[in-house]
Amino acid sequence: DWLTASPANSINAFCKYCKNEIKTHKRDLQVHAQAKKHKNLVKEQIENATTPKITLFAKKTISEKRKIAEMKLATFVAEHCSINSIDHLGFIVMNLDSKFEFLKYIKLHRTKCTSLMKNVIAPCMLADLVNDIGDEFYSAIVDESTAVDTKKLLCIMIRYFSKAKEKVVTSFYRLIEIETADAESLFQVFTNQLKNDNLKLENLGIGVDGANVMVGEHNSFSSKLKFIIPHLVTVKCLYGKKPKKIAKLSGTRWLARNEAIKTILSQWDHFKLVAEKERCYTAEQLYEMYNDEDNRVYLIFLSSVLSKVTALNKDVDEAITEWNLLHTKLVLALMSLPFSNASVERIFSIINIIKDKLRNRMSVETADTILRIRSNLPNGCIAFEPTEDMLNKFNSETMYSSNFVEEILDSFIEC
Image 1 (tube, rainbow, N blue to C red):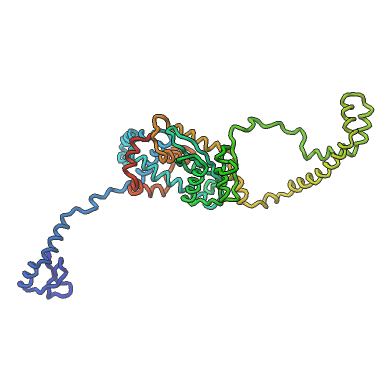
Image 2: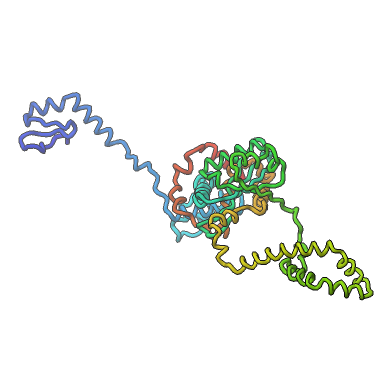
């Protein structure tokens, strides 16, 4: 099977293995067949023919329906229950209905579920958040706490104007483990994380609690940020320390006082004479007031000031275009400033639920993943739909590319 006709001419023969032309003489053909080079090439060809093709070992591509089903199951677990639950839930779903072909091929256990959440779903959600912020102004609401396993955690929420949602939103950003909770450590960890995610420090505003390490005048977290960002806006959010009700409002609008003062000054002498003739407690009080010239001088001064303020207020009320003079970026920047640190306190409450005394060995990375998925499910796991980027990343190279052994160990000791 190694001999064939020469493609160049019909006189010579051609060796398919050696790629050489041979004269069509019996002696020449026998010599070529016994040549060492020819025998080696024939041997290689036979060995290659018996070697299984690599396509026999390649895994079949997972269908898109199966990918979507497994990612929805992973988000359900992240929102509602322990990762260990997926070991049984996967079997139940797989045996639900034989009419749906893709269900019986679902293979999702705690190792794969953890990897799917850590390496596919959560990174895509984080990338969407960073891309949505872009070059716009944003505020980071920062707080630190200690978990049940005594690890110190830094939680960061981000408030910004979302172009995708067309409104100002407050979203979970990062949960980071820190060695110490001093100002220098918080500053280094915080700024390095923003730089790694390509978020501009010059567009930053921060919201912190009243702890000295956060807002102290010297060597605090905010003062260190202020040193590298001179225009930084720091909002001290003190939850629980404000009045529980609205204070009583003034019974008289302050702009109406101008007219009242004008009336009193124009009829000062008349009021003074009436108060002098009347004989009652109120009249005596009014007489003392009208008889004091200091009061009259004070009202004259106040009247001149209130006249200008009232005129300015009327101009602003009548000029609708005044609001449009404010730059859009300024308005969005002001709206992006935090007004409370309640959002970051809610995150710590969720951490106390998902990382309790029974699951105290859960890694910070896994907790960060669960928090990110939960915060990006405003309508729950039922409304979750995997994005195109998630479907593309759903492959073994992405899911098990790094620290595969640690992933397996984590699946047994976490949750």
